[in-house]
Image 1 (cartoon, rainbow, N blue to C red):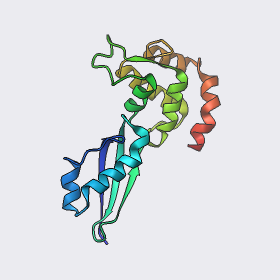
Image 2 (image 1 turned 30 degrees about the horizontal axis):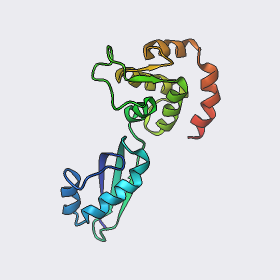
Image 3 (image 1 turned 90 degrees about the vertical axis):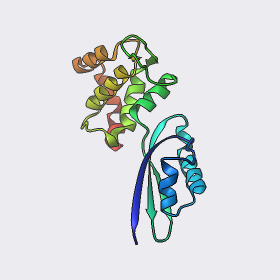
Image 4 (image 1 turned 90 degrees about the horizontal axis):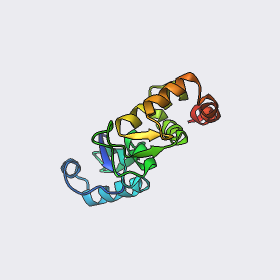
Length: 168
C-alpha cells in the first residue's frame, strides 16, 4: 500500500481544478473535479482565507483523505480586521485596527504551529505579524503594544485566556 502526501496552500472554499493541483492529482489517477469539490467543502468555513491542506492518497486504491490546517496568521488577522489583504506599505498605509482580544484569539488558534511555549510569547509573535501587514491594535502601533505586553499591561487579560491556550 503506497501512500503519498500532497501539501498545498489554497484559498478556502475557492480551489479551482487547474495547476498546480490538477496535474499532480491526474498523475495519481484521481478525479480532479471530485477532489477539488471535497477540498472546497472542507475549507468552506475559511472562505477568502489562505489555508494549508494535506491530501493523503493511497496510490493503490485511489482513496484519499483531506486534512485542513489552520489558516495563516496573516489571513486570520486580515479577516479580524475586515480588510481585503495585507498592506504593501505597512509603515505608511494601515489596513485596519484589531483588539487585543483578537490578537489573543489568533494566538490561541495558531498554537499548534507556533514555537511559543506561553501565551504571552505567542501574543508578541502575532503582534509582530500585525505590524508587518499594516494593522494597529487597540489603535496603537503593535510595536508599542509589544512593549506594553512586556511591561505587564495585558497580564490579566492574558492570564484569563491562559486556560484556553493550555488546553489547545
